[in-house]
Length: 51
Length: 222
Image 1 (cartoon, rainbow over the protein chains, first blue to last red):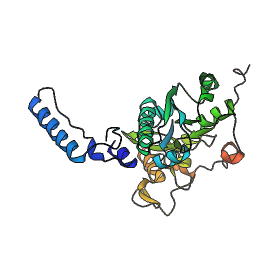
Image 2: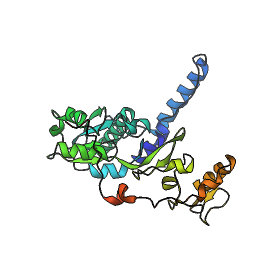
Image 3: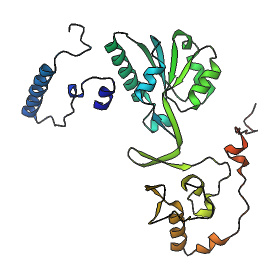
Image 4: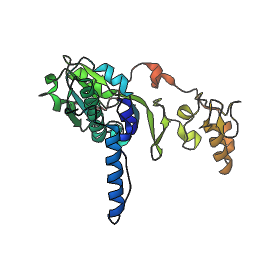
């Protein structure tokens, strides 16, 4: 999927896959925080009409 | 089954650059099994093309469809009511699909989104290899079930050649020398003498050399 995004000139950092179980609540929160920070750093998507 | 690879995205984008409304048709046959043209791949390609065009500021409408097979007129017929509602139709089937579609609907434009490669099978998850060249006169029983026509780079019927080294073919260290395997199997089974048997020259007229082929089952023809 990252290669596909690169092919259409979208930043592949916008997606990430994580493997974790339902028992890993704290890790899920960490990942959500990490992805939120990353998304803020990358700025609005080129597809965002409000950009 | 027939093995295919998806065409590069740029090539597909070039095909449809002038269109605004297309249909993308997958096939539940071989291309579903080799993960190149089934429902999942139709959805992924359609989404990718939509995103790319949206980014360019030229939105693209794509109708996603999948047929049981694109190599049977009865399934091709299922597009009769809708084929002409689009600027073009893209097929994710092997090379047979877009041709059957073109023949059924001459007024529409059809494009292939995959490159049809060969007849083969999965040797491990995600890896497919050629096993049959479709020569029309099967002789694999002479070689203990291994086909030198499809699997020897020179299609030799009396190998191996001087390019065989360490069980590999001279064209690439990744290519097995099938003649090395055939000889080893014969030796293991104590039947190496089989390879001394003089056989009639292979009749290549049943292969592609004889021109486009047709198979007729009289009992099925109405």
